[in-house]
Length: 251
Image 1 (cartoon, rainbow, N blue to C red):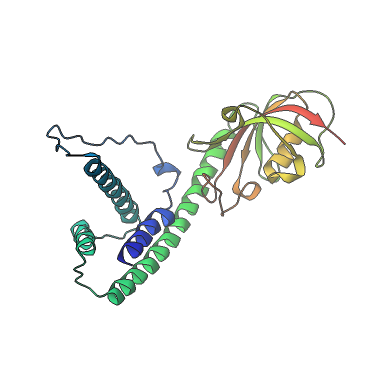
Image 2 (image 1 turned 90 degrees about the horizontal axis):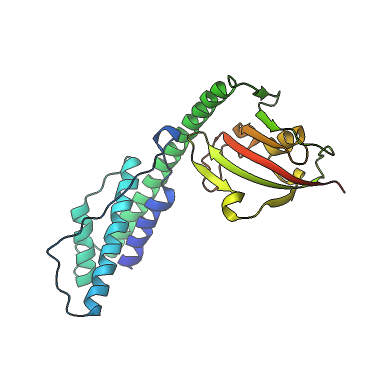
């Protein structure tokens, strides 16, 4: 039971942690220290046990780092003591006490996460507005009544696109901090869909080009995924897409 509760809290740290705003998202390189005074393991079982211990330790370290950003501080030594006592089956708190403490911690994490999400959403909105202001100064940039911004790099030619048009596109999607969150080029093949089935920013923006055309779209949250976000896309994100319209089929 103790291991289950510990795992539950560690998972909470990782699942509820929300990355900070665009200004704080950045790539970091992490290195693991490697001791030259290596322990000589007697067999594979000892190596396997050690490897699992390191994996758990890294997992806990990551969890501590995430929950500290939520303003929740815990003592690592006490956590290690709890693991040791659970393994030796000599607990200093009752199972009921432990369960109650962890339930209280879970509530605290959820509350802190909601606060962090709201903070991030506000910051993302501000950063998006700043990006769009700079984008408006670029030669060839247009802004529509809906708030969509775009630059036509190649108008293409052929039939007009409607909501029921089946289109084939290659595209790359970015956040305003330059992080790429999606790319059909990376997957090695274009995407086919009916225009009415995609986000509003695409529905409006792709109508400005024809087959063979290329366009850059800057899509505010209201025309994208709103404040709910998506995997890899935080709430209230302004989205940038480079889109190449490969084929058009009007049924």
